[in-house]
Amino acid sequence: MHRKFLSALGALAAASLAGAMVIFLFLPHGAATVAAGGGTDWRLAEPVTYENLTIFPVVSSEVADTQGFETLDEALASGDAVVTESGSNALHRTRGRDYYPGWQEEQDEETAQVNQLVLVYHGKRPLLLLAGELLSGGKQDRIIGKDRIVPVGPKPLPLDVFCVEHGRWSEGDQFTASTIIVHPSVRESAAVEQEQGRVWDAVRSGSTSAGSVGGVGAPAAAPPVFSQGNIDVTISNDAPTESYAKIYDSPSSGAPVNNFTEEIQKRFAKATEGIKDGSVVGVVVAYGGEIAWSDVFASPALFQHYWPKLARSYVIEALSRPQTREHASIDDARAFLQPLQGQENTESEPGVYRWTEVTQDNYVEISLDSLQPARTKLHWLKIHRTS
Figure (tube, helix red, strand yellow):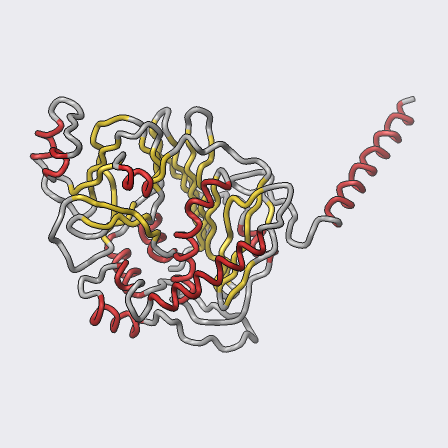
């Protein structure tokens, strides 16, 4: 009886394995499931390629409801968020509101600082901030330093930022819009390096990648559109304050960025419109033969909200790197999605969010989890460090 039981168990295991093999063999090319850091059912759809940029859509059948969060661009446009220089009197005049006893005096005692702003949020949903979102206005343009969630509540909060406009400290106190996410080299300098000098260097140099994009036997790469010389000329002619927005949207650079972005978005839309059994929640990004970056979100709605700004940021990075026609494989992208096992660093606000950074060799993985109403991984970012 015991021998018969073992024999039946072995047969069942063999049948299960055979079934699993059949399922794997009949999956569409590139659609195999990957057990990644942010979602157990993530899979990759066929890549979208144009020039030296390849984008692999990340598809998931497990999606969260993210309608309960407000984004920075929405909050600034509606007036739910007011961001000012620290020590600014602008807060005193904001919609005639008082926030808590003594807050005006606290602000008056401070002076404006390069790497810290003040955020007052009076929206009805938690506010989502992503590292690299650009705040325009104030005494100089800044970018958000880290992913975080701001809870509902009117108390002014210190907001860690980095300057992306080196040569201006003037004009207004209030930041009016957030329509740009800076490209990966600048985002990495802020989110990982956390150094103002590295951020300025990345803005002015285009890409901080020091590695070769092509492999052995790969075609020779053309110089980047955003070469150091071209950026220097743009700064001299169109961006004397070294404003990120003006450098990468000047009369000389805006057209190639816009044309490239329009083409990659068109191809991406066509490639993903027929996806079944899931929705696109993010992307893995490659430049030439190098898998370099990923942005994955908790829902297709959240991804679609950020996608136009993200697409443009990936294009600027592509134009800042050698223009090679070599392309990364889907196997490379699948391997990139695997979670890291290195040193972990966490920050959290009880009941609001948990931020986790894992570093292993030349890779960094950053995830932002919302803790209410249920724990949800809102954003998962992985970086192949450029320097």
